[in-house]
Image (cartoon, rainbow, N blue to C red; front, top):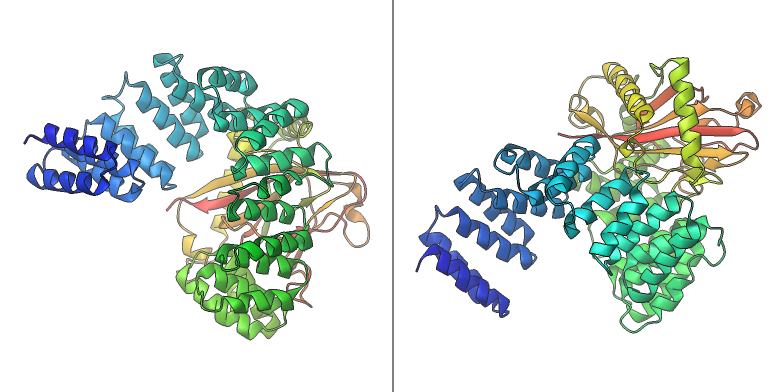
Length: 558
């Protein structure tokens, strides 16, 4: 039997639901034809459709190794890598296929998607232009183009989403993007019509439920912004994910008691669901009910995953038991050496007990710095004006640290405005200056272990506090470094108590009683503050004036 016939028969078996037989036939075929790239690619497609993504990827990569010009295998491998959360690797894999795929719109579309997901927005725009030129009315190309426009906050985002919807009618993901594009233009009523449709017709889709709540909150429905969860949770077939999304939404606006009560209701139906129990324990702790949280944690004492150990460590800190917290958090630091939350919590415990490791983690010279940005006065003025314009259609978000202010949507540096490109370049210059002043590389330190790796900006946003507001103490769990650059600073920063000052090291209320800030930083327009992401940080409230920042996370690409 030829390799082609094996692929055809295996595909037919898979179509009939005879997965085991199809898998066995592919396995025999690959043994008989180990040099056949197209058979390996076909087998990869089979496993991908069955949800065995890593097995599929290995077969796609085998096909590419056998035939370096097999564009189909490269595209399939990139899609698999995207599913596995490795878009940068996907983009790198596709680049060598450029000549062989010049006229292949699917290649350029998937390459644009990979580059977009990797944060390479300029490259993604160039690849998307190639895809559109080759496939100007293709439904999938239109969908990808609309998503890229949304993430870049392109003025054409609404129009492109509307075009994509005409080519992909009823696509909930596109309607989701359309709602966000409308909200970015300030067309909140129309955006809410879209999310109402999603909640009505795709009620179990938690992303749609959360976006509807976010838009209702932004529109001023502060009391009932999440009551649609109640309706959906009562529907037949609504499972724990709906209740967890409801809880996360309430947590995002500091309604910890309501969140804990919601999860308690869910657990009357699913008492053994570990995800619900973990979320309830965390919510109880945030609500100040540490003893009740401990009771839930003890019900699941047999579970020892890093997430459970982190929750136990956090709660032991609340209960004033730093030694017990350290016993749990030490496990997490071994299992997940880069876990920002575990290091941040560990440091609180070390400070409570006088452990010298605190000085090693956060006390070394050079870890916290305020640096003047290399920008002219004119550049600063044009950037400030642009940021203020962007904030006109921004709102206070759900699930972020800002209280009583607005935060820009999406990744700020995904946008195409040249002023932001100049700002990003200036930030990279400041990051290089910061790196040069760091202590030597230390393989055991969560930041210094990555001291010499390539760094990248992996999240960016602006926050405007207008007349009042502050940032609650928090950490950024996905960064090596966190930051704040200052664009507008209220006059009252000079007042007693330092309103608007950045506080580093001060934990959230109730988490580690008795600990205060390690550093208090006076904000100064035109400067950037960089510090380890393992440091809790927040700000002192302001009561008047405007305080505008641009913040970002720094990650390692190694």
